[in-house]
Image (cartoon, rainbow, N blue to C red; front, side, top):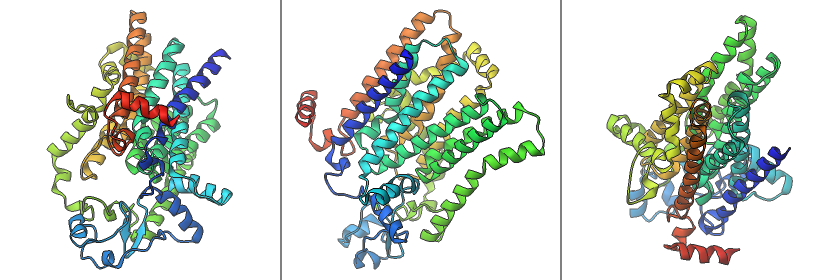
Length: 462
């Protein structure tokens, strides 16, 4: 009982520390009206029975030869809605529809008011953090029961913070999509783990698999790059097929449990087709932003190997002494190197294989690579926010490997201390990154260039 109380307390502290600072920047909190209320406007549109946003496009925008060309818009002094999708004279939301269906629309129907986008981000962030703690607890109890309780708490808190620190700094709209993807994704993985490793019978296996599939499929309606984590389903299915006799009936049951992917996929394709006459177009090609994304397929750099390798390096291993935000996730959070090291440690690799977790863990790292490549190929330029797409998967893999490291290393006491110190260091790094002026966060907006100024500002807001 004491352990459960401790877990609840640390979860509460972690959530509080991550969601309260989301109010600090007026740009992202909604105090300054901008383009961040698209989810709210989309809920209104659905209630009215259409898929376009109610904002009227300026005739000068409609008449442009290429409304997606930012230089042309500037030269003609055209008014437009920033970062909206624009197609056939109407504005659309290119962000995924899942948060609207499951959060904004129900809130509007029940209360009669719009849910501020900031609060949706806070909610999804809290759901993700709870998922991290529960997933890590489940993994510890299943595979490495000797891991010290304090280490479990330290790693759960640390990995929660480093996964979503950026969301705390710039929470609304862009990170609403990301936080929703993380929330659905972490719980999808939790139910996949339950299905493959912790189900009492076949019925429970299939129920957990179906829930995990539904949540995983819905992630495509949050942020498609994050949804590519669903490749971890491959090792999960291999384990499920190995657990029991393979026959047509067994295969049919598993296929039925995977139907959410088909159903959600069809729904999303119909949704896209009704808006853009293309079942695979989410709206990115029609963005009105600082680059012309209308003809992405013609960009030669998308298939340039050097460009992609530079993108992988930017996301994971880039080193910069002048700007913390430019460092890749492994440089910023060195505890993640333990995950890579574990794959080369003979005893750890053997333990992963014995518990049928080796392929699953490798696929978590592969997800990192695939998502990094997709972010690189389909973005005009990479920014630190995109690293949030891959951090959560990398920390899950790292946690699993640390658990087996702890069991298979001689001097456990020193190892435990080193891991906890690395965890504390990464938390401090997350705080420093949060305070670094960037992306209209509160230190950027208020021009707070010293810790003293930050301290005085925070005191004045309490």
